[in-house]
Image (tube, rainbow, N blue to C red):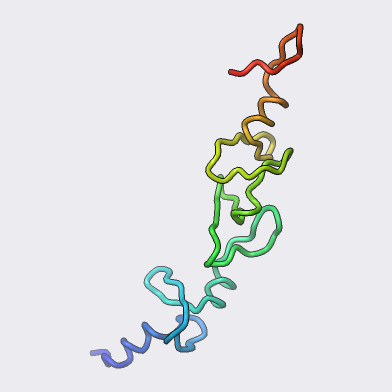
Length: 117
């Protein structure tokens, strides 16, 4: 039978570095607790745009196995934010619907304006 004191102390220690988590922020993964530094170094996804890790206190926006910081999730052409907006992907680039339509939609032969689907 396991020592109940040891079980309690495991829940207040980082699973990786074993430092106490009392009074500190921590992250939970697969029922294990980690201090923020260990969690970020072990599990943080790299951002596609800035290549920096997406730390546990940041939003991790994902699309088809790729990850971005909230501030880095932008249209590849006009740099407008794509957060909570419709977007399209073309050749690994993410584009807002306006830029996608300008680049890839049919144009009127006479006036050259984009024909919206």
